[in-house]
Image (cartoon, rainbow, N blue to C red):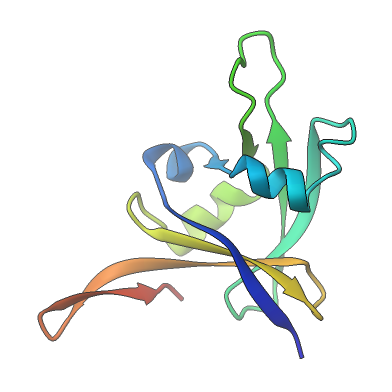
Length: 125
């Protein structure tokens, strides 16, 4: 049986759903330390929600001369899932560290929905 702990959550921005997912630096430094060790990127596997299918993401730190802001971004694999699942600007991403599973990370995305006149966050399938 696997267990998970939430690493971060963030409301998705236009950049997140159209180009690349902006990833918190503190998470990259702590949990994807291969980037810090010398390479400017690392590939890692994730699962979406309770699906068994694995996806490969690439966390990259921009390193060109014009990239003064070294914030890590998820490039490879992310936009495919955005389009497949229909994620939108304003949706809430929750990212987890997983133990006891075939991958080390998983994530879920939530959207505000109205239920009996109340707005609540519902997980997207």
